[in-house]
Amino acid sequence: MSATPSSTAYRQSPVSRTVAMLVLGVFTLYFLTPIWWLFIAATKERGDLTTTNPLWFSDLNLVENLQGVFSYGDAILPRWLLNSVLYAGVGSLVATVLAGMCGYALAKYAFPGREVIFNVVLGGVLVPATALALPLFLIFAQVGATNTFWSVFLPSIVSPFGVYLARIYAASSVPDELLEAARLDGAGEVRTFFSVSVRLMVPALVTVYLFQFVAIWNNFFLPLIMLRDERLFPVTLGLYNWNTVVNQVPELRLYVLTGSLVSIVPLIVVFLLLQRFWRSGLGTGSVK
Amino acid sequence: MSRPTRPRVQHPGAIAIFIGPFAVLFTLFYLLPVAYAVWQSTRTVERTGTFGPAEEVFGGLTQYREVIADEAFWDSVGRVLLFGAVQVPIMLGVALLLALLLDSPVVKGARFFRLAFFAPYAVPGVIAAIMWGFLYSPNLSPFTGVTREVDLLGSGLVLWSIANVVTWVYVGYNMLIIYSSLLAIPGEVYEAALLDGAGQWRIAWSVKIPLVLPAIILTGVFSIIGTLQLLAEPQVFRTFSTAVTSDYTPNLLVYTTAAVPNQPLAAAFSVVLALATFVLSFTFLKLTQRRAFS
Picture: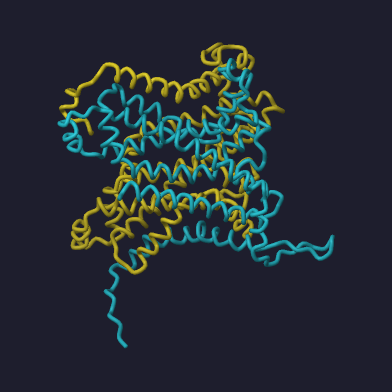
């Protein structure tokens, strides 16, 4: 922490404290009001949505709304949520392992072409994912693999940023002496990585996982272009689809709102739980 | 002629196992698409006679001439540039302000505020846009007093309504990047300034901000990349607002063009857009680095 023991002895005017707290309070309202509104909306009966105070409860109808949204359209929403968990949850796990191994090797082994590989991967960080979506579609179309689970999953498990972060972190946190000691003990390189080095790299790897998770969860263009079959949609694309027909099918409005709430609550919880990893990892990425 | 022998590479097998899988996938799903897009953009469709079969042939820079002449494309580029010129400084400014406030000893309850500011980042762009779309609407909004008077979804304001959605989602994320590098500053750095009797504002301005400049630059580059790629939010807003056309942002235009289908032209748009993104973020990096690190 940056606060030194003497920090309480600063000259602090009550005015600057009040101003600071006021600014923070206003921004708290700005950030949390929409989420609060969404939560309130999801607890209401359809008829109350436009007629009662949007920021406070009326008739509590949350359970019925949840039942309704989960069973609507042959229970497609649970399927979308499961898809998202597979694309983002499993996809980012694979991405983290691949990026961790590659970044580790780039940090800890000397071989010709190492810097070339690293620079090409670094260039990959600057290539926006959306620029890749269309050519990826055309390539998958060549092999007849569009509109499949793999067409969204496979491109998602490549994380150049993960390689970058893993390399920087491995270089500074995995001591060469430790690897030498493991070699003297007769442990193989791969085993040493998975049993020793990975533990030292955990903060960076969790950060890579979180970043990739969010990137896949938020990725809209790729599934939008690739997928036709509703049953393969991630939850974002599914809710987007519902929202486009809200004017024709008014009862969907409440389901779009309830579904949105359902889709963000787990994320917010995971984020808050893993918060300290965000900070340590982000610090690594930006300061060193 | 004998060349100096290179030192033998240690553990080639392990290196192959570690790098191989990523290298293969990176080639397939990054390098190959980039190459494919460039190749596709040099194709053009030719017909023999009015009703003859369409045939794709090499067309050189034909598509790029189309891109240069395409007013809709340049309008959309201008729109996102204007968007970025206003939204990115506001977003980063707020992020910096909040990070500095959370880092100052004046503030109580920093932990709560940090969580509150970061929470919107957990909301995917599509969902955030749907939410705000309802919040802006004249009937559903909790702020109907405002939304009935001011048309937040009309052609005049909708760009800034979208900017607000993007700001809402990303301020907390950028704040956290800046905040973590503030935490990484060792306490001794402040001692001298404190002994000189500098107040908190003075320390923030002359000590903290220069030290976290690299983090701010990083967030700046990512924001620029994000701005040029805008797609999900405007695509969602098409449901709420007729002012958002199918060529509102460059990526929407790519999507629309690909759906025509005119793949070569869509590919050319993509290539130009990726190049522009690259040049812009690279230039920004160079410009700011000279000032930050000289």
